[in-house]
Length: 326
Ligand code: KG4
Ligand code: ZN
Image (cartoon, rainbow, N blue to C red; front, side, top):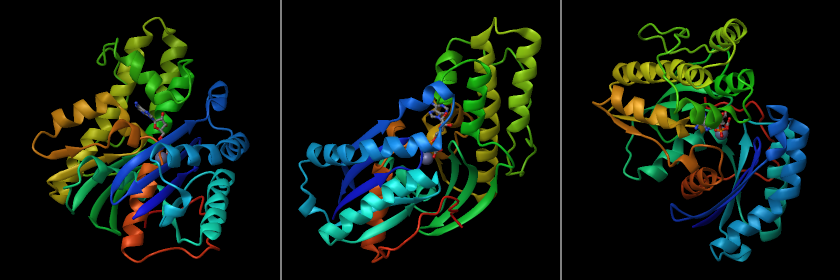
């Protein structure tokens, strides 16, 4: 099957083509307009998607020498995400599907992040434990089968990506904060400052990162920013240590051989290294970094799975800005 995937849930305009489980092209335009605001401005995001989407879709088609007439279906992010941004992607996709007279499927962005791990490890088998860490979500899942997901726990307040973004803003760095903190942290000592680790006790699968951000704020007020690399490295370590600790205890709890990490924060090199180090008795899988942050390859790939299973959406499906996985 030849599937076009479209992703516009936040600040990435993306299109990809998946052919029989393989990504043959993946194009992403990251909206830089938000950098100066330190976070995504929803109305600007919708306008940028509107401007870029047609161009990005044609880039993905041209890059893989695919014509519109060859497409067997369109997969598009239905939620969760920003309403206006989702409407741009779904309206475009519905128009195209209607014009080409091909099926369309609305995709859960969170499920697609998890399934990006099959692109990295096609032999991955169920069940597995998944740490899903993005800008809006921090969750631990037991993935029993396609469509069978058990939530072990999630964050009570900020998501891990949000902790990176808010920390970066406090440190006067750019947006998105994760890559900025990661870059600075490479030159710093991660044990220099002991930031708090919330809810760290064993078999507690909930997270809390809002206190960490506040303690960074207090630290900066008291100590200035003279050792900014040490601050970034210690702050990053505080987030990553909690994530890895909880992934480890979730894997023990569910007795999973395979653990996967998904979402934008999974691109973090320290998280990749530290988790493999700390959970050496299990198979730890990460998507390729370009398939961790928002992309349409994961949407096209999961869409094809649904189409193969005989599923598709009616053309009148609605966006679901607060869509959950179960
Ligand atoms: O999955 P994603 O692209 O979008 C959402 O679905 O939310 O995740 C974006 C989040 C942002 O908070 C960003 O700061 C974080 O992922 N992120 C990172 C890195 N790259 C992106 N966090 C830590 N280290 C990175 N290298
Ligand atoms: Zn995402």
